Length: 242
Image (cartoon, rainbow, N blue to C red; front, side, top):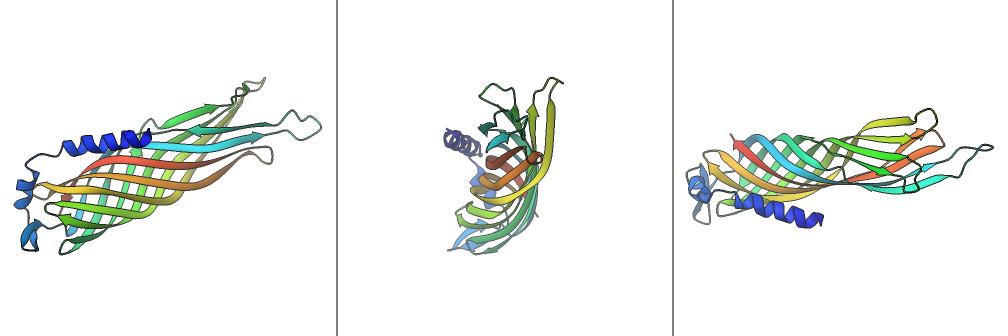
């Protein structure tokens, strides 16, 4: 289902590219590829990004009290989806050799309303909560020009700011634990770019980010959660090339 929504979002974004984009691109500074003039992607660029992140945080909770007052151990898995809209910016630099374009890029985005909660199915009232706060990337890019369109692939490091929480009910009103962390992982993606007018470029792209398993020791030796995070992001960008 997630892949269906991602494909639909990409198609919708591509349908919004102005039909006269190719004519506008022809007026941009260009290079000759196989005798055909194409716009130049070389140089620094920057601009805003707008997208949606589909997230999956899979993990489990385990808790017990040491003897002699040990109740039955509590264990349950969870699969949370703390996805939401994102807004941010990016900065990069390209070099171009004929139809080939190579670049380095960094980006950072806030993620809004990206929180999800999973309760103990056994009815204990316990729950785990994962919130995605922001994401960032440091990537390399390689692309190839087909007429006025650049098709590219990207790969590199992914970063995410997250908050994990666990709640346990009790006669005293319950206890909550929180842990905010910077996660690091890898990112793979790809997309399409085309000139709109002047030095403005329109981009549609998809990113897949994966982060390793994280351990949260709520009460040392007795209550803990394990969780990993995977992100799939579809976004558009309006890039100004200097």
